[in-house]
Length: 165
Image 1 (cartoon, rainbow, N blue to C red):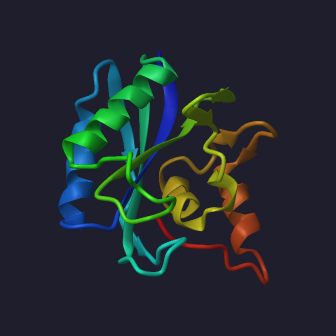
Image 2: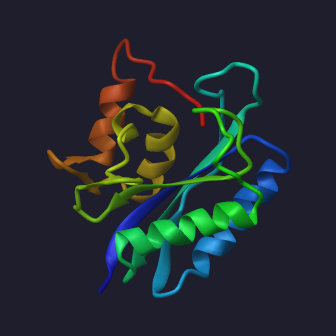
C-alpha cells in the first residue's frame, strides 16, 4: 500500500483548461501511482501581482509508492512539458502550469526545494476548497487538523480567505 498524497494544479496562461486536462492525464500516468480522486476545477482571482489573468485550480489525490523527492521530480517534469520555466518567474506571477505537492501522507518534510505540507496550505482557500472534495478527512501535520476543519477555519463567520494561483 502506498502513501496518500495531494497535488494542487494551477494555471492562468494560455489554454488553461488544456493545461488542467494535461495535468490530470500526466498524473494518471505516474509510475507506481494510482489516482484516487480529482476535484472539480474552480476559477479564482490571482494572489500577488494584479496584472495577470484568473487561475483555474484543482487538486488530485493519489496513492503512490514514489518517495516524496522523486514524486516532486515528476511534478516538475510535467510542468516543463507544458512549457513552464521557473527560472525567470516572479513570485506568485503568471504560469502555464503549477503543480504543488500539498501533502505526502502524514510526513513533515523540510528540505531545500521541498516543503510538505505545503507551507501556505492552511491559508489558501483556493487550495482547500478543491482539496476538501477529494480528502475531507485527511489529517494535515503537524497538528492533525483535517482538511475540512482547516477550510472551516478559513471560511467561518467573518472570514473570507483568499483566492488565486
